Length: 510
Image (cartoon, rainbow, N blue to C red):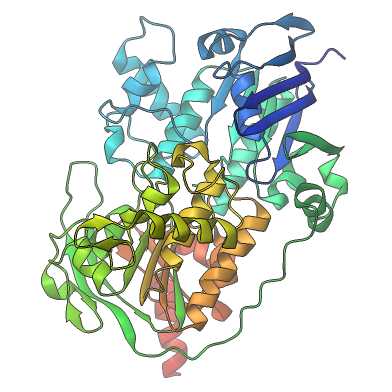
């Protein structure tokens, strides 16, 4: 059978690293092919070469058996290649429909395109509003835009980078049905994911990369989690030790938090109540776009419209207090958006320290202590095994997973009283994810109050002590992880927790 895509001896060098070193990869028509590797293994660079974003230094690309030169994304799309990037390529000031129109042939009326977008989004279980401006979307909603844009191009090769991080378990099952249907119709799929269970359930073949080289190929359906992990990172991820803890007093208390929409497409927050206590991790589950972004804005101090008493830090009303005031009193914050909010792309890793470390260790009488922040950055790089050229490396030069490790390390190094984290391991390999989760548990054990928002249910069950679910701007009652199940939380993600609460009340009164 003639291959749909064949890469021969692809090599790409950068000043500090060889990103791809004589890589061979073959994808057949109708094949769902996984590309697996730890962060910084060279997967994204290779996919950018296939999509025409990056030019290789050496090697050949064959499309349907013919050697070709993919000089640009426009050429790739003309061939029938669609790609969903891990870091999105969207214009903030344009609407969803206007962004998607940029990648399609001209002349399509916008109202017709909006209808096509709505129909496609509905077909694949991806909730989207075509007229909404991108700057109002969460990271998860932006990923939906990218997926729909790729599907509208009727691709013959679809490249998906971490596509299920925004979906409920039910929606993941629906997406898998769609991908299998596309494959049966002859569409080839290159699937990048760090979720080994997804790869084993969905993919027909798997190519493993490490350090820019191909280190193995296999049929993932015949492999175990452990064997795939060994191929990817050279070892099995450490076993997570989550021991029961006795939480202390409430560090963060949210009482009757209600907030109108900041813009027409925002989510209104409605009568939210919960606590986060010393020595516990409270996990918040939910589908992206149900108010998590708005809630984090209020808790972090980026949005100070809430009443003063709606948010209390160690018993002190802080609803009107800004970010700097809260940080000075022990709050740390990891936003879901890495580049642009979690880190300034053009600044070095050392300079990015100043986004959260603005105490005597980094500043002196208004002057930056350059040596101190460089040493602090170097310590984070070493402790969290961040693959970077050093403290002076630009944040934008790191892979997504390595930048995430650095940002979390920067906040952990502050030894906070309260840590707010959104999507802690999104797009992070299994080894790095295990390390990040272990650090969060270590913070908890040291007495820190930790709040984690994640769309990874497995992650929340692994590290949380209690769970609440967010749906349509409301939060469910809290439930201990030992009393919860994936099916139950999946139902609650649709806002259906009242029935469970009523049944629990009936049992308690029986």
